[in-house]
Length: 81
Image (tube, rainbow, N blue to C red; front, side, top):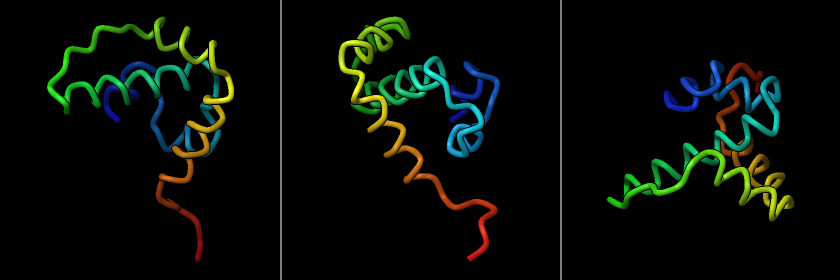
């Protein structure tokens, strides 16, 4: 989360609340996820933010799926039950 905040200047909660929802921020979110996934698997991350943007451009339907999964994974902070 800190890496995403460093890249965008906003918190993930802002993204989850649709305040920071943009193509650029979505690309950065996916990039950070892939970056840390590679790190966890002890693999070298040999891709850039631009590469991720290209991949998402090639399969645009994935973008809405990524956003949906991410938003559903966030806790309901501040929502009354």
